[in-house]
Image (cartoon, rainbow, N blue to C red; front, side):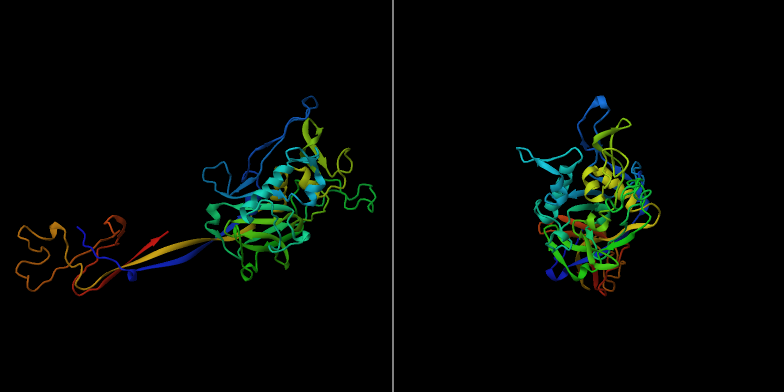
Length: 422
């Protein structure tokens, strides 16, 4: 049986605390094929079955796991994808027109251009409140050179970002330079076509140009937008070089591919596209100076970002630019906000020394904790074990249990603090 006491506003306090957890993502988690999951969502139409030119598929994004994603205990860490700003030169130069419904049209040497544009718009709508807006780095930039036209999106999962990312805790080790592929020039005039190589660097792990990118300094320039708080991602060795944005509340990092990659570096290798058939597979060769129909002057931007599928681009960024190994490739701290209500349940010396439990008295209505004949000497006492919190209609809302019974008598003032976290 319970004994009741009404709480006042002085007995209730609220507080807020934050917990931080360090997250380290190693190179193999990002670069490994077993830890990176793709989803075939895009399917192209067949061009010519008789010429063995088949439909191709690609994901719209890929998910990085902390271990083999086929295991039940694997946890998704983040999604990675790419996007293009619709008014960028990369898009405008590749566009060949619009149909009557306003749908953008592109040549057969371009792949998934509308999907890349839509992914950019999707993030702009979520983070900026307008899917026609552009991201700028720095965030308050306005010039074309500050605009992020070719974006790499890293969307962290709720399990790892928790309530938000902590400011000035994000860091990423990234290879700005792709592999120098093969022999230079291959007999081509170096002046006419500089930076030409004959090998393939699309699937070769980078070994030069490792650079650290971080959001250091974001605490001194706090800005809030539609998607929550935002900070600039910078080159750690030159903080004036802004290369992207970190949206802390949304747990999304946006990187300007043109600034974190040697954008006009020569690119070569086989990618899936719709321009020619090689060995019975619907592929095209980008950047080779010896293959007819290919582009001997191809660059990562715009050529690779236009001609390659989203899977091709994400595969290259994840497997080549983060390298492989057990070193940390990306790290950050998450933040968990705990809102607490502290309820102080106070019992003065003359309170709660008697129990309404029927077993507290015998059949003669005598208190059983007092020895017979000692009624004028001994006083009653109790051993509380539980506190119940009720609303104004006597509905039980919460129960707090003591780790052990506590003696309560007329010589003791007892205060129990009940903490409710949410």
